Length: 475
Image (cartoon, rainbow, N blue to C red; front, side, top):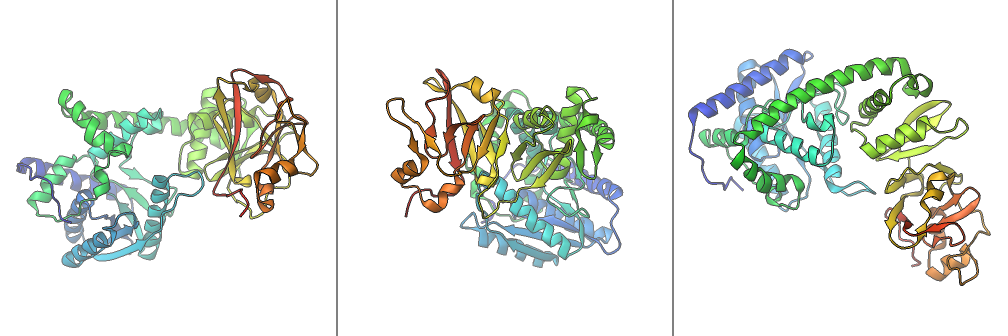
């Protein structure tokens, strides 16, 4: 369980510089974050090298400064060694006479969300609970200079804009997954991983080794173990250069945020965005405002495709339409000339009303109300005519009874009831399979296919309905 890495040649000056950088960073953080009387500081500690060093340094700092320090551990249960890690951190806290608390969480992949996002949300929910329990107002995490470089490169490869290139801020107020009273801070951002390894060696800090950190199937690990060594060979000290770049990007992002705040004051009322005053803004300022508004509520920035959908579906829709857009766990809707955002509430009952859609070329549109997503796949073979889909109007409708669909030009149309019976689709699950209409003509029936009577083209678009966790076959 202890560190198995090869010992590095100790460089006392490097370790002293790193410890001094940490202490100065934390002092600067405390100067900007005013703690209430009786409020405490906490360290999020997994037991790995980075958080073990942070725990050790923070214990020394708080002992000298008189701050109360708590140590929080989140047990994900994703590794067979997770129980040992919890015990290891608990024992270290007992040795240092520090307050310790832990939470066990169960991570599942829900609907369209991936396991890494699910684990992150579960971790922060557990940390938020512990912060509330122990009156913690400053939560420290062990992100360091190499983490910052990995984040910047990973975000750039994903096509992120300034928010991605800005990386992680030293101080993160009003974190979307933490209570409003808690500030997240990263006092090790100026320290490299090598410096932390040398501090651990000098102070004989015991720590665990997470085997998943060596798995190159995870993109961040591939960057760390396969890409960074190549870059370092040709650009020594590049992580420091990326860190400097991130500070410039953060400055630019803060200026954009200030502009968005000004625009928000003139467009927002009671949490809703009024669309009429937004028409006076340039297209770039509208996008900037939408990014800022979505992040301030959801804690994550929309992708370029999602931003395009928000901008064009909501702002350019006819006044008598009420388009819906689902992004992750949130629903966006145009109502009374306003853009409204609400958490998704997936009912136990299938929808009974139609839903207007606007397709702008995206690969899929999530429809949580029907517990699935509508897929649009380009195919070299004959498929649905693209112009038909973009021209619309498109609506998703529940079955009303009596609908018929012609799937093959050589065969007559048949009732949906008979087609579902033939495929063995359970009667109780058929209401969760919506019908897509182009105007008043049935274009596509979920689980069955596309009508052959409407315009086709080659290449075309193949439509598919993807249900989330629903087995549509008869038992």
